[in-house]
Image: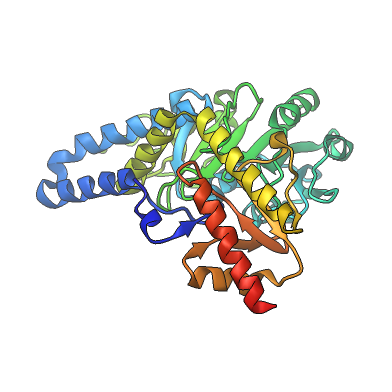
Amino acid sequence: MFPVTQKYIYLDHAGVAPVSNVAADSVNEFLREATHDGVFKYGSWTRRVEKARRRCARLIGAELNDVCFVKNTSHGLSIVASGLDWKEGDNVLIVEGEFPANVYPWLSLEKKGVEVRTIPLHGTEIRLDDIERLMDSRTRLLSISSVQYWSGFRVDLEAVGRLCGRKGVRLFVDAIQSLGVVPMDVKEFGIDFLAADGHKWLLAPEGTGIFYCAPELAAEIDPPLVGWKSVVNESDYENIDFRLKPTALKFEEGSFNFMGITALGATVNLLLEFGIENVYDRVLGLGDLVIAEAEKRGMSVVTLKERERRAGIVTIAGGFDPEPVRDDLKSMGVMVNVRGGGLRVSPHFYNTEDDIKGFFDALDGVLKTAG
């Protein structure tokens, strides 16, 4: 199912995941049809898009038309950053050390007089009382990653959602480092907006992701991009009628990335069939093994060890420079990455205990040679 396993130990799903056979098959089917049948198959392509939308909505506990397809997480973040009616003196909260995709769209608002406030970290931990302390009557939105990309810290989204609801603050979740592993329910967690690219834990190719907008908020967002598909009568080309769709679908401004979306739909279906709870248990179990093997060797674990405070990322460190170690491991066919001053290990559900042991065997050899 994952041909990459025939050649490599692949433990970098927090970076760019390998593509599975089901994703490749969906793309190849589209290309065969586009080559041999052209637009005769257009109806089946649009039906596949809607099937993919249904699967993505199910994955996050949303209604069908509250999910739209975007190019990437940055695209989803920018829809809200550019589209909300910000006023001078408003403020938005972000977290110290966030991935830049969840920083720059908000910094761009400073030219409008919007203040960007940064929630401090305590080690790797984000504390709810720090979030609440920074909120006031002009706080419009909190934008936070469900899992921090460098440390693997997992936010208690249910608690954060309750806080935002109590304070009247909109909640945007960058879910790229959890969606596909950690169960997600946008309604239960009180999430107003969510974005996630497909190329990490969703196991899809780069260039396609999803954006969720709570139905009651769609009218508040002025689309930064508008096209022929943004309007209610999208197929009536000869009669211009500028009435935007009342749902998240208005953010799909033009023609679909059929290949990317059908591949995403195929991989989401794979995860749903396996069961997200099963994926979650499997990935956390592999993380437990990473932690145990690291501690056996006297290494430090940057990621918090409690299961409820992590997801798929475990970052480990020791008395070594992680970058040359990563490069040596890569030359041996072992893929991990460097974040937060350590080696970031991020297995998925198809990885095995032997993969983890193989990684540590290779790491032992690299460190022995370096020492």
